[in-house]
Amino acid sequence: MQSDRDVVIVDGVRTPFAKSGTKLKDIHPAELGRVAIKELLNRTELDVGEVDEVIIGNTGTPAKYPNVGRVIALEAGLDKKTSGYSVHRNCASGMEAVSQGFDKIALGRADLVFAGGVENMSQMPLIYGKEMTDLFIELMKAKTVQAKLKTFMNFRFPYLNPIIAIEQGLTDPFCGKNMG
Image (cartoon, rainbow, N blue to C red):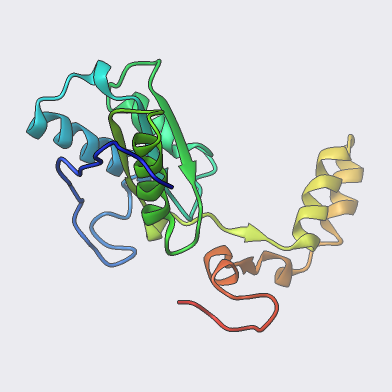
């Protein structure tokens, strides 16, 4: 890709590190991103209307906000016309967001992009296996108390074993090697 446009990083902000399950455990990833963008706006005195796009890398997609990039843009007070989206590339999600922001500016599709990554390992979504999912579906279909009780009789405790999505996502399904 060749471009005559200069692409620069104006400033950067990061939130503090904390061990999983400790000080930041109750802070939603969208809130972490909102705080970072608000601080960037404060430091740089940029007009919110000048921001063309927010691109956020995120591996543990929050169930409540599947497009955490858009939520962060809105929660940070950016204009509703400002595009916001999320990217996922395991450990390189934040760098992928920055790379996409660079490309958009270099190609003239944007002038000002906020890009980065956000994660709260204390709030990684848990995914249950097929057996538990099937049980939930059968419970939804059951109309009577008797049908619901009959469905519960099929429950087995191992169904509650969560699938650690981040662990599976970091493991190559072909060779079995783990990135993390």
